[in-house]
Each structure stands twice: as C-alpha cells, then as structure tokens.
Image 1 (spheres, rainbow, N blue to C red):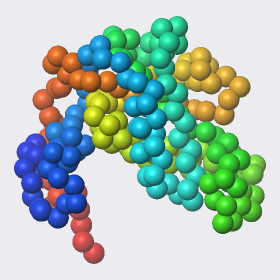
Image 2: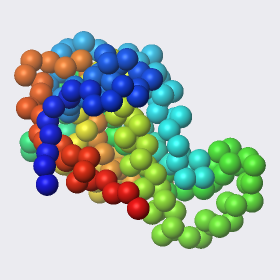
Image 3: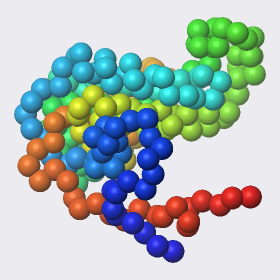
Image 4: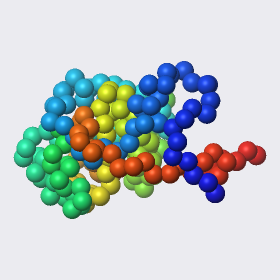
Length: 208
C-alpha cells in the first residue's frame, strides 16, 4: 500500500478551475483556529442553499442544522465537548450542531411528492428510519463541509463530544440526534496541522 500527500493535478478532466478545486478539496483542511471575523446570517444561508442540493436516498434530507450563535448556547455546547475541542469551540465565530431528524418521514409529501404514499413504509419502523436518517445525515454532512469551503470559509468538523448530553441540552422534546459539531469561520493563525497521507487510487479502487 502506498499513500500520497501531494495536491498535484493528475487529470485535466475537471469542470472547476484549479483555484476552486484547491479551496474545496486539495488544499482545504480541518481548521483548528479562527479569526474574530463574524460569520453572517447571509453566509449561513449560502451554506445551506448549497448543501441542500446533494442527493440523499429517496430525497429524504434528514439533516438538521443548529447554528450556535448566542454566548449562553455556546457555553452549554462547550460543556459537552471533549477537552481537546472545548477551547476551539468556544472561540470559533460560528458553530453548527449537525443532527438527523428521526421523524424525517413525516415530510414525505414535501420531499417526495411523486409518491407520498411511500411514507407508510416507514410508519412505526423506528429502526429503519434511524438507519436511513443516520446514513443520509452523514452524507449531507459531507456536502455541508464542502459548502462551507465553497462559501469562502473554513470548517472544523468534530466528533469528540457527548451526543446524549447535547441532545438533552438542545433537542429535548424534538426528534433530533446529534452526530457532528462543526466550527466555522475564517482560518486563524496556525490553523492547520500538516496534511496527513491519503490512500492512493490503486489501493482504494478495484475494477470488476
């Protein structure tokens, strides 16, 4: 097995220019520090307006985004973060809690108007809804991170937190399960760790 940390072009078969590819994929990395520049409501809307177009199974769109802007809400969130994530979560200009809606099927007539009767497949099937919600929520989270970058911001996605604690704090009485917290803003000083190796094409792919 070999790995690669280079960002050199290996093909010219792109519809985006090199600067865009670098910003979204090749040069983008998880940010650990941010400047004090605020993230506006307009930027948050831009992020979602890009995120929503990524495909999901049966168009279910289970992702729910909670923007943590107020000092009070931020303090409550930080209390549930792992120790290594507390300081950067407290100081980031914006933080998003990503969760999935366990009752996403209730919106079936909205997101699948061509066959709203298929909602019946999921009525009473909590396990299936949870699996599909979790899988497709994570899929949408990837779109979300790319959208943050496309909006000219840096993302710091994290999994080091207490999901049960966050759910009790923010989602009591609501059908949401948190699975990711993302810091958002303009990258600050020493924002990046060195890029870690990526598995190469020949190791990851197979042709059958």
